[in-house]
Image: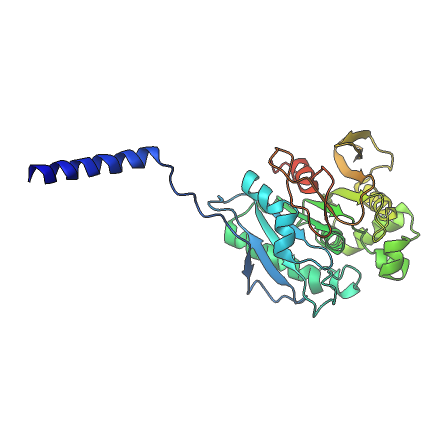
Length: 324
């Protein structure tokens, strides 16, 4: 009997020591989830989202849109956005295109019925944001849009059609709002650009906004590979013309330096606030810049159209937005 009591006491002691010395099981990481029933969904898109475990209310929302021949869950992870959501504490809305809408899974940034306020794909994405805000209690004043290529084109659509809902946009290898209509076709826009003055570009944004809307307008950050032959660099030049005009800024950069060895420019409004920012990624083709690794400014995973250039666009954008 004494031996039994001693063994029981020893087992209790070992159990107590294990609780102190052994690490607790790791919390299960969040995952990208599909959401249904987020509204009337006139653009027939799919909604995915990523919400870090234990995310408190009052945090920002980032809408991140994939490029052609990509899908929402993979883009959210490969671009580095899910990694940053965990690190900095915000949630992601990841709109997904379908081949029924576009054979190449491109968002229809060039279709008039998908880029107007209250219509098509633009309205579907706005409804996704409404669902996310309702479910997470997020900060309505800190909602951002970003995307690659066709997703970048949709980011400018959201900035133009819903300037009252989006604080800023991050456009990677994307296009100015209304470019296909100005150029006569999406391919002319992508490969040649459209002949428009800065005021004409700005007028397209002002016409897309709610009637009588006078600001504030979303801030723009744009990334462009200098060797991109799918969306030519002229499109970033036109983005600068469009959004500096909307912001009442001139087209002379107020700051020119390098970040990660790449040319970087900042344009400020008459009050001195930065309103347009550009990164020219020297020698990069068509894709999302990433910098895989565990360093503080590193994020992303290289894949098709996700290019390791030692600079992570998601980090630079999120940092500029004050997310972390």
